[in-house]
Length: 157
Image (cartoon, rainbow, N blue to C red; front, side, top):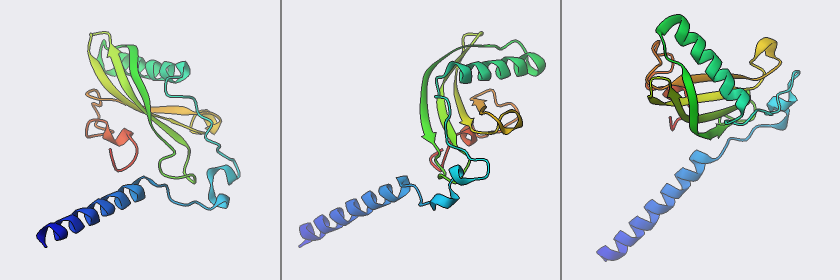
């Protein structure tokens, strides 16, 4: 009797866990009329890839400029382990964003995790994409605290 009850409980718990994981990963329904593509100024999600040289060049330029102006001699040298971690994670009616993570090598020999998002129509005058980024351990203003987690998508931060 106990074994049968234990098996039933185990099966029920497994089914519940599977249901919760499917619900947590499924995207919510958005009416086609409310999608970002249906706006007066449509947004299609045509964004460069995480490892696109233009994206990494923009991060390097802004990082090096900020460091030279405010903090000191650190400069971005190279990137590796670049990978996407989300694309339009909040739904199709929000501004399209591609979330990425990787490692940045600095001229002092240190390696840091970098989290960034490529965002549509948020560049100069809203005509192009731009990048929002955070280097873990160098977020001195704590804009994305703790540890750049607020630069990452979703509740699984």
